[in-house]
Length: 229
Image 1 (cartoon, rainbow, N blue to C red):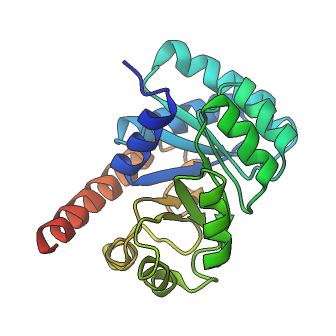
Image 2: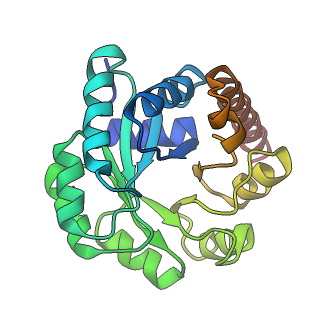
């Protein structure tokens, strides 16, 4: 059974730990890329609302996977206002991510039982997001607000916080060890994971291999951290 309710989606995101972040205006290409991510072990995918008619592309993609591979969990990113969140939720989004914190988006998502991960860059914003019912907080842009050191600083006085940085996370062992060692529960990775070179070559097997390698690496890192703790 596919993970579709709020708690199951949150659990799937944290278990997967690496959320591919992707957008392309071509529906067929999106389907191929997202299937490659799913095959590589990343069934939760963040489709960013970045281009004209993105909501229509998203609808077509979610309809496809509802039939072809219902285990895929489609989320939407780059959401900054409640009406847009509502459109994508109606089009099948199972989680919503944004570059900023918007209380009205939180209300819409809470009303529909949809996880909302707003972009925060300070302890105050993170606290405000938690008051609004956000379980996983996106730290954005991750590298610009202080990177892993920022996460460590927040986790000290707020150890219950679940952080998912985007921006500044590379699919390398060095980068991932720093971030997960600081205490994050997941991370979003875009063009460093689904690279332009692989896209231009339509190398979907290469994308699948990239994703599998990164997901496996993170599971290893998390297991080592758990043993130390």
